[in-house]
Length: 220
Image (cartoon, rainbow, N blue to C red; front, side):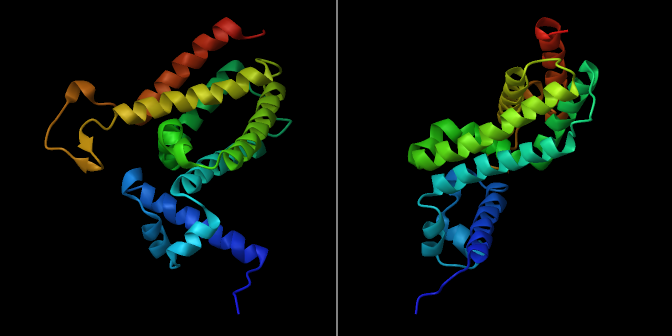
């Protein structure tokens, strides 16, 4: 008799597969990771992983979009309708979130860098668009919340757009911060002029960009 899983059991298995992929991606490059490796971490067959995700690209695209959605939802929860932020408070908040993304969500930033050139090549378009729409909906809610919290410092669209700019800056700096390593291995060379202290430099760039942006586009 075929095994019958409840919806909760299926959800738990799907989450376990995604978590295993995240753990491997934290220490390996994307091309090195196989669905067999992921299955071994989960303790299931490779066929099981393919029942939940048709391709490796589908798996990692799901991680990227669903985890980013969850991240935005946590930000939305943290900003209540009664929260009040000045322009300086908003810049400080976004600067703090830059560190949060690098320190606690680096997998998302790395995946974002390979989304277009690698993941979209074999990911299911319909499923990707559906998850992207869900992410966009939460982003719009977060933008609306920031309009309220800042007393209309910027428009909802501007606030939502600035999260994309923030992610792009972090991804670029993270990519260039690894020139003294190759495929997760530290090289026996030094490039002091190329060194990037990722967290403080990303925060500095975020703060500078937002400060200048607000000077030019603030509605107040």
